[in-house]
Image 1 (cartoon, rainbow, N blue to C red):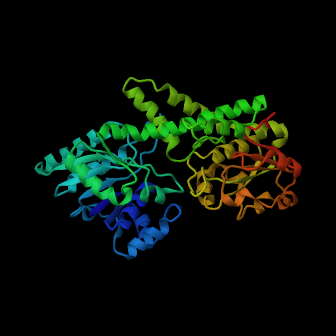
Image 2 (cartoon, rainbow, N blue to C red):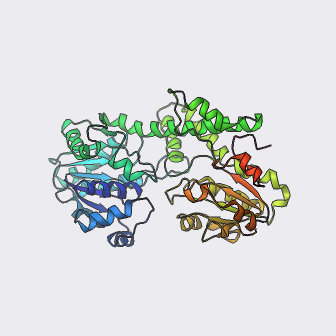
Image 3 (cartoon, rainbow, N blue to C red):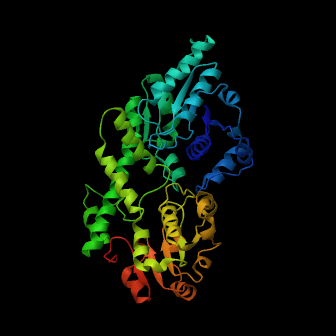
Length: 445
């Protein structure tokens, strides 16, 4: 098939590269000329394991193209995916301006029957609006004889595992109200789903809700275990033991039950907030989603509270080393990252920060531009520790898992570690001579 993909952000690039790997002819469109030029040269705007190789491979094979010309990309295309951003507005609702702009352009340019796919994360009812916008443009052109369907195809890509998630999905959800459009989408995804993974065809509105419901459910598990971790800290229990005790229940399971410094990234925070706003639009109070968001906002402050309590007023001019800036390993995404929130809090307290991340230094430097005078970025994990009064660990990159603790002690001024991911064993750290704070293991007094 010939596929057009409008938007070359995270979802658009992964979708385009993987569909090209499936032997489709894929045209990725973006209005940013500089970005397109870099992509044509194999230079990606994001870090995702395996993506660069896939882009270069399929570009050389003549299956993946990058262009600013939407009209050219739509020529003879059977399916066009909308994969532009839907960032949160100040009230938490998704800003759909880019989605609607693309819908209007599609209506102004198509000259044949086509399937339009909402791949961007959009609230329930968006497909109906996109349908009306395209139809309005066709009517204005006198070409209302053209047929198109708007399909919802939510993405379930985990940053750091996105290629695997697309090529070997748990399931593919297709929201289609037209049987022919559903069959076309099944045909597109069959090489990836195979016989082992279901292709779930449901109505459009149910598909739109499914994306938000899935992310809110996962976010709720994280907020729940973080709240239990706070109780463990106060009561002297161990969240690692509690997690094992409940996670081995087959009805519960272990996934998304690791206590930490809160969830971040481009999906969970945004989608939970939009779900709350969607409820308001339909007159439904999304109480659980609101609590999940509240708990997470509080959890992002937890390590800053620990650090502030330990140092008190003496934190002024203290050097705090930070390992990990991305919200999770295998990505350079710092959006809503707990590390960024904590660094801002530390700077406000008067501390200076030496930060390091294997891939996210540049993104964090831009995101934390307001703190530039008090935040420096190290070239490697060990130089960040030189004369540090404490180390704060946020992202469980593999290189942080088993560091040379003797070198840590040699480089650091004070031997204090605040572990936001519970990577180390408290007993071992005490034996090594560190003052060790973690989350939910009874060490926050």
